[in-house]
Amino acid sequence: MKKKSYDIKSGIMQKLTPPVLFLLLVVLLVNLVLYQFFSNVYFSYDQANIEPNSCSHGYFRLGILKNCLPWLSCEAMKREVRKLKLVGEGAVKRVFLSEWKENKVALSQLTKPQLEEDFIHGLQMLKSLQSKYVVKLFGYCEEEFMVLTEYHPFGSLNNLNDILNLPKYKNSNTWYNRFLLAIDYVSIIHYLHNSPLGTFVMCDSSDLDKVLSQYLLTSSFHVVVNDLDALPLVNKSAGQLIKCGHQELQGNFVAPEQLWPYGKTTPFADSLMPPYDEMTDIWKIPDVSNFLLGEVDGSDLVRFHLFDIHVACKKSPAERPSAQMVLDTYRKILASLVRESVMPRTKDML
Image (cartoon, rainbow, N blue to C red; front, side, top):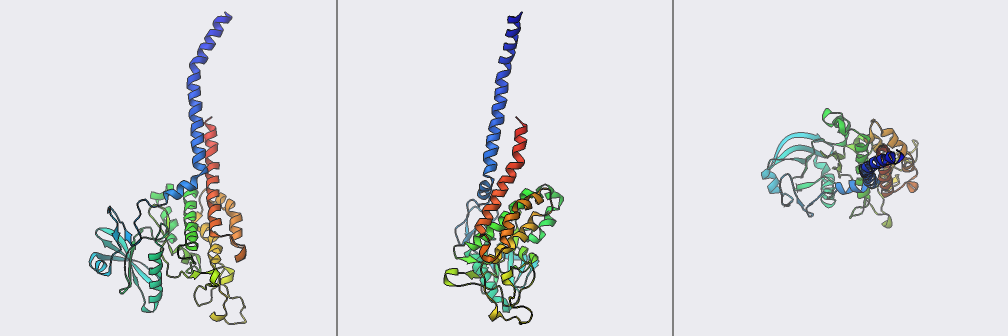
């Protein structure tokens, strides 16, 4: 009897072993793949954010066009671009939703003749800094003060909460997607601080709304910088620092070094105002990121992990981290948070 019972158990084990081993193997492989993916999540994100088949400098591709075309000239813009409606207006430019060969585009035109210098500076920066971080340029006409760029229907980052609160995008309103937008923003600051032309500072940034208005939210939920009119160059090796405008800046949003240092007893004078560098952009990163993270499940946990780097951003200019250090920290925290949220689920499969 004992031998017969042993033979039955042995037979059952032999039948069960292959399926159990196969299941264990599948679970282990899934864990390995997930671990590798989420350990390097920020690298794959960066690669996805790089435009495939980008055109050479001075050329663009739009819509269903397969070939890259040269930036449109004055003649082509006057002949082929049709204005539809006004969609935005700032101190320097009016922006019109327009149409070019059945494609929606954004046409910017100068508002006031006395701001011609700012308009031309913004155009030169737009031409020189074309990249995945900057809105696409399609054409320009200096003599008529017109610039043609890619149209983004979501508009500026000021509209982020309104867009994500729409039923259509409810599933996109997560801490993960919002954190990616913050990484986009810091990536742009890093690019401007380390551009091929040198170190540029985003000077149109006296308050949060002003900062957000300089950036566009794309339909694929990325961020690109749009307004480069106030973008002075810092060259520390040559002793070249900057001042954001010639008026007194006030408020908690601007960096301390941008405030008048001599008190109320001494009237503001631009000639006495000390210059500063790109670290003013670093000071503002925590405030912008706080807005981008919003008030969704998990956003407070992200803020908790960002606490130390954000405290560092609020130190004296010499003690603040570089944009590269902030970006690296953001990416590491993203990878860590995603891994922590996913790995417990895979363990439950074992």
